[in-house]
Image 1 (tube, rainbow, N blue to C red):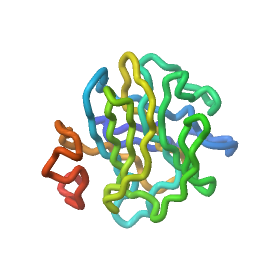
Image 2: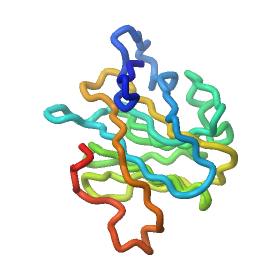
Image 3: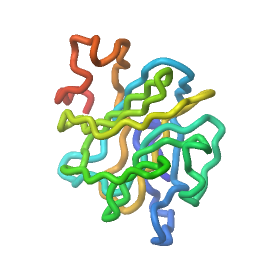
Image 4: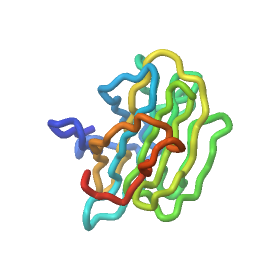
Length: 185
């Protein structure tokens, strides 16, 4: 895993030798910020200018202290993982029980993530299309941190963007949660 000095851009390393057997779940990185309550929003850029959107990525949250495994079956909500994964030609899926498979067209170029810790919801948005993709409902306990995995073999890197955090619910806010404003690009 190659991570930029500012810890905002990551991609698979030239030295990483993927076996080609399934998604490389072991390439996960954890965010630095811990959440134990409240609503938190961040965005992840999945396409750079003049490159196609990433085909392989995994984004979500993980309970602080959870272990990383190559085995997808270990990355479950009961073990403290909640995520949306893009697995190239195998499509998009969650790690919920049962897993949710999605057909997302167009492929997201910028993914918004809204964690509502107190209400037990993790929501994903296609920011460019101003579209809600799905919400995972659960009950969080202890600290959770953002979870990122850039996958392997894509031209584009995975880039975390600075975003203002929402302080009110989307229904109460007079401001849209998502916009096509590209000032964060």
